[in-house]
Length: 491
Image (cartoon, rainbow, N blue to C red):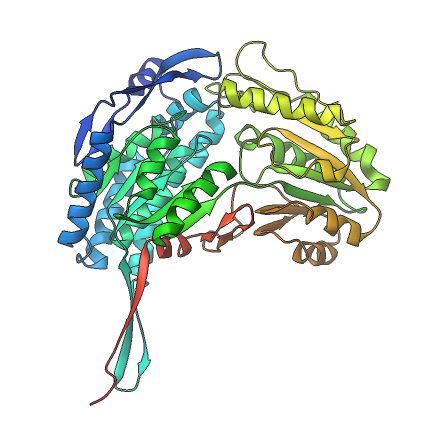
């Protein structure tokens, strides 16, 4: 499959895509509720537009449209092959929109364009993957029965809701929406109020593909809008990516009606550096762990756990690499690090660093950052007791701890209540794998840090406070399905 070249669009063209709309029953409608705050360009701090939310009347209209379509059953009863064809068609349309989606996200979130153009290939690939699940026969399986085959049917549960955060909104939305539609569900997307614009392109792609109106809708706003959606009895499946507080609220709302639920809530991910590790590779891993998505990603480095004999070597090597890192405007092709997403989040990270310093921590950083905008130099903090560093920071900040034995290292890695990602560095891969298997977390990478999964079809589990359920090519599809086993019992 040939991937198109993704070039940076002109700034004047990028700015044309910052008009917010609700997408309800096939109609683009300006949201009318002023939230009393603004979306900013984090590269400069300048205002982009006021934050606006969907009115209660239009939220109800979206729910009614989705429920009407589910009850009519036309989409649910469309063959898997026909649904796959439409999803493939949507992928083809969305492929051409990726450069603008990426540029809009860089301007709005501060993630550098060299990253957003890579990440947002997921926007169209997610639809291709969902189509592949259908073509592979996953929706209808057959197993032997007493009188012929027994069918195991995966049937749409009903109205689905997808809620996404600001760090990579379009790609996360595409993964959820594509799977909900593949499963046969009408789906309502609520983007974050801090970065809603890139998600709007999904409406263009699905409309151009010929998706019947009302099957995909967008409403806008904050937590109160999300609460209205997930607490509504007509909603039967919810996929949420975001923070722990929001995830707990969503889980509580879904528990009342036993909705199908998928939560991905971040982590405080450990990197264990064994005594024989390649110092240069470790330093590269630390840089990647703290600068990918500007440190604002669920599998970012949170706790750096180093054998005590090489702590100084590792820190010095990492700080030397950070020193040459280019921080700047996210739309510059030279930038390797952009600003944090918004002023409130920037302040939360600064406050978290100050709190650790107040507990005896020493902050180490070396990357020069611009004076304007919401920038923060990647920071390693030594000298804080491990029990004081259990919570996720969600920024380019990691605490540093040392160990003597393997058992100490594993205990430190497993000390937090989270369990999403982890890393182990060692020249002895067999030893590293032994350590990795003992880490209580959804996935562990040995001798590398990357946004790429070890295998695209492998599940992406969440342990502890990192979430509920699993994400993945098949796992997300299953969130929106109920199973029904049908066969002949006797003759």
